[in-house]
Figure 1: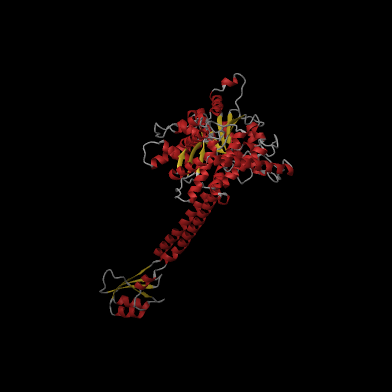
Figure 2 (figure 1 turned 90 degrees about the vertical axis):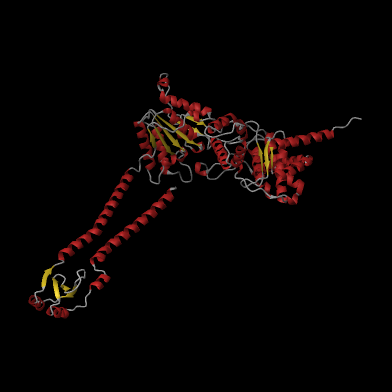
Length: 630
């Protein structure tokens, strides 16, 4: 729940509490009136038709058995002769002087006496008062305790919120981390520093003060920190960068001081700060300066890491996926001595990660983890874990005993493209989408520089009505100019197929995303990669945000004349690739129609079958063009 939601919840609970207390207080105030007064029905029941004159007559007639005089209430309780024992006495209001009545009672030998209700009424009144005073006192004590707790919390406001474990039991070891071998070797050395420091101090080496884990989301930075904590066996503090910064000035710096004070008391120890960019951003960034509270927190962190006083035996491990926004003072040697890159895994790394996550899952022996690793280039460790989990969920839904390759394929499609939609019925729209997708796949297959096609499908997924997958045969760190042009040509194959088959008036909006992608690739070829007639120039840098300490106005790196040339070069690259795409489809119109018919019928064509059909058709065309000797 967010802080705003918590505040709203607390406000609602407080208002309910106040209303509840008010209701109780009102009820308690009414208690004396309720218990101190005689109910109306009771009064009606106890009223008697006897008057004072009737009382005198009955006394003279000898009809009175017993009479009680209550001087406090000025009442006479009359017990008549012949009435039942359980009949209540009749009450008669007395006069100020009742000499005549008393004389008659003496003459008739009537048993009478004086009684007083003052003591009982005083006891009842005291009891009623206690009934509403004691709860009020209890409420006062409750509020006093709450205010005492609030004041104690205010005194602890500047204390560190770091989770502390004397010996971290994260359940994660280095053997549970795969796919990032280089980063693991660096961090295993840190564990050795903590366990056997004498090996390094004997030759004059000092323990590094900080290790910064840098990498895209999902690559395993936090998992590596858990593995270090599980392996080191030393006290471990873990905290998020956002937990330092508060609305109140000075709280963040106070928490940093408190954290390092606790760490020094437990040295040697580890401190893990996740998402350190929340507190370590560049100082003075933005319009009119930066966030003073965050900057003071960063200043305190810099001082504690490598300031006037040392912090021997404390190793700080931090993780971020935004190293470009961190302050330069935080990255210098002496603070974060080591910067460990945690990149997305390669083919071997993905296979190892899949083996780790497949340990606790029932996977059919026919499933090849290597084949899955080849089909998932660019996947991070989190993506692969989610992939196998989706496959396991799908297996349980289909009531199977073990995960098969069918569930893995469906899970890959879902992770990459989204949930599966309802297949289109046979119509002009379905056939148009089939031409569009086959156009992508056919052009990509005919170009040798392009990645091989993996699957073509008409089943909607996410926002796409049809999809074409291409999977590279090997890891691609660098991309050549011919590969970029091949990708642009294949991406334009969908629009080219629509125009060839249906004509220009019937082209659709289905290529809008393709055109955005093509324009971006062509512009990068011209402005960043030097792959155009403008020469070896880098004319545009990646976008820089003003709130990260950059200039308010983004200055152009080139003149208007160069801008016009850039636009012309981008247009020329895209147009040439589009012409090439239309030529390839026109030359292979027969196989295009055959593949569209097959796709419309089966709705999905696997890559191996697609390439086989294209190869067979190419061979037939080649055989037909060979002249027959006479």
